[in-house]
Image (cartoon, rainbow, N blue to C red):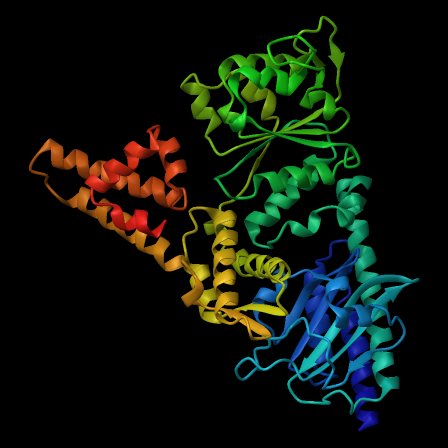
Amino acid sequence: MEQRRLSQLLALNHELAMALPKSNHVELGTYSQFVVSALQACISADAIVVLQAQGDVLIPQAFTGLAPEVMGRHFKLTEHPRLANIAKAPEQPVIFSSDCALSDPYDGMLLAEDGELPVHACMGFSLYEQGQLLGAVTFDSLTPNAFDAYSRSLLTMIQSTVSAHYSAVLNTHKLAKRAQSGLAMLHELSHQAQNMIGESPPMERLKSDINLVANSDLSVLIQGETGTGKELVARQVHSSSSRCNAPFVQVNCASLPENLAESEFFGHRKGAFTGADSNREGKFLVADQGTLFLDEIGELPLHIQSKLLRALQSGEIQPVGSDKPHHVNVRIVAATNRDLQKEVEEGRFRADLYHRLRVFPLQVPPLRERVTDIVPLAGYFVEQLRKKLGVSQLVIDQSLLEQLKTHDWPGNVRELEHVLSRAALKAKHADWQKDIIKITPLHCELTYVEAAAAEQRNETTLLESSAFSSLKVATEQFQKQLILQKLNNEHLNWSATARTLDIDRANLVRLAKRLGIETIKKVK
């Protein structure tokens, strides 16, 4: 038996060596999947996961035998004692007893499970190079004591073999990224790179564009629908740049009072206007040497746009009430969900400011165009919710995952997060006594949103196919369709819908009631 396993070890070494990249172009996830496949021939397990270390967090790179949501989870070592024990053992594997009281990070996620039984056997080994933790490999089985049959010497040799090959690939991967994007990319692991969830082609293109522009000082205009994650992209641009250790300052242009916008941007001096009781530094000065993120730039009034343009052109700001200008070195990143080109054509946005901001445009794809990212995103959000709700394990039922993948997501990633947050809270309330809490379609409000969308589609069909008897009927049908559409876009938020339609909220509710949209209001 031992001789056969030694032969498997030699085969493992050969397979991993053959899979090593022949150039600096390497996909870490692809190689990690090779590792998983090779290990399956050596060690019998219901689930195997290869994880990469980023600081004190382990992030799955490849797996077998688990629900796909695991790819979106980030396991902080301080919150997962089994993974922490594995990480602290650089020279030998760690086998946990079947009655180990420490929670397993994959409880409830094994595809081989019958019901919701927790994992019975768990083993893992860390991957190190010169004292630095590179990652870990974990093995789980529903068979108690499944890994006791393997000798420690064999498991240690497997650990050493995988660690050596994985180290070579990881170093090649780092060299490739450093060559591609400059030394600033070295900051990536210690900042928020791990939060850019998704490996779909649109996301890969976006990440590539971010890497390309990050280490320059070009102005960036981030465009995308509401809820796509434009702020996250802006932070990624900053954290991957040479300015990453300088301030990242955010201004929400939509919430700026028009009479205080100039003071917010450029600051003011004591006594400059009523209420100016002391000197105040503006956002430009606070962001000096760093990045100024102008969120919802399309909402900025025209007269403020002209003053902002002067600051961008000259690099000089003048606080309200001061005669002395200040020079600042600020990198501008702006974001909007509006079509600024159309806004320019219709006279609501300055053409010169538009071109000044749009030196390097970044388009954030809507969630419906990156369907393959929905499951890992759901896994990421559920792991965060597990910690916030203080439960041992929180998982998503497979049937719900299928529903999530088919939903249109008009609110994009933000809607996905909020839907899962509400569902997780309901699931915890229903099964608070269980160690493994499963989110099912019964806990999810997705059906209500789908019902609103279905009603909207029915109204659209009616408009297109019916010959109305009067202008009044046609007008009412159009109003009803428009309100339903805007409600769906704003996640059934009546206040936001009223703002979008430029109507008082109370008047909108009364109009909706007259048009027979009461059912949608009750859902909200």
